[in-house]
Amino acid sequence: MKCEELLRLLNEYVDGTVDPAVCVEFEKHMAGCNPCQVVVDNIRQTITLYKDGRPYAMPVQFREKMHDTLRKKWKEKFPAP
Amino acid sequence: MTNPLIPETTDAELVRLAKAGGLNAFEALTNRYEQRVYGLAMRMLRQEQDAEDVTQQTFLSVLENLEGFRGEASFSTWVLRIASHGALKIIRKRKGLNTVSLEEAAEAADDFNSVPHPEFIADWRQSPEHLVERNEVRRLLDDALTRLDEKHRLVFLLRDVEGLSVAETAEALELSEANVKVRLLRARLQLREDLTRVLGDPARQLVRSHYHHE
Image (cartoon, rainbow over all chains, first blue to last red):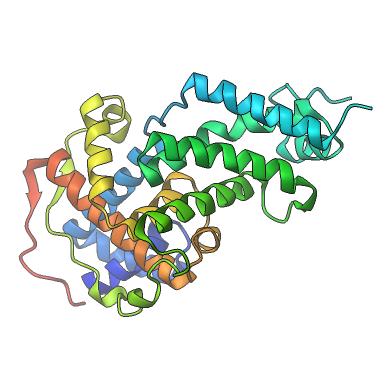
C-alpha cells in the first residue's frame, strides 16, 4: 500500500468500516511508516477532542420561554377534556 | 404507568406516551435533546439568536409532526435532522441561495485525488482528555472550525460531533454519500493540520523524506 492510498482509506479505517483484508494492508503499511501512523493518531485525537468538547450552554431565559411556548402549543393540540 | 421523568425510560417509550397526549413525556424528550440541538445550531450558525430560533422551531416541528414519526430512524437522529434542515435554511438565506442545493454541483471535481497531504506531522504533547479541560484549547477548536469551509464544517459537525452515520449526514444536508465522505476527509485532515501545528510537539516532528510507494 502507498501513503496516498492510505490517505484515501483514512475515513473507513478510523471509523472501523474498512474491509478486513484492506485493514491488514493498512496496518502493515503503518507499522513500516511512522508519519502515516502519527497522522492516524492525530486524526483520532482531533475527533475525540471535538466530540468531548464542552457544548454551548443554552441560555436559561430562552429555555424557559421556549418551554412556555411549547406547553401553549401542546394544549392547543391536545385540549384538556 | 411508566413515569416519563425517570432517566431509564427509552426515547421510544416517551414518543409513544407523547403521541397519546402525554405532555410530561414530550417535555422529557425536549429536556433530553434541547442542549444538543442548541449546541449543533450554535456550531452551525455561530450566532445566538439564530441558534435559539432553530432550537425553538425544531421542537415546535417535533410537536407538529410527532404523529408522523414512525421510528424508522432513532428519535435523536430525527430531531438532529430537523435541526440541521432549519439551520441550513438560515445559512442559505444568509447567502441569498433560497433554492440552490449546497454547492453540490461545484463539488463534483473535488474527489479523493485532490485531497491535500498532511504537512505538519508530530505527536501531540498531551492527550485529548487533558486538553479538553483547557479554555485556550476551546478557543483553538472554535477557531480551527471557523477556518473550515462551511461545506466541510457542516459535514464534520453532523458526522463526527453529533455522531450521525454517513447516510444520515447525507440525508440531513441533502448531499450524496460520496460527497459526504470526501468532505469529511477534507475536514478531518484540515482540522488535524491546524491543531497539530499548535498541539504537536515540535521536538517530535516527523519530516517525510519520501512517500512510500509500496
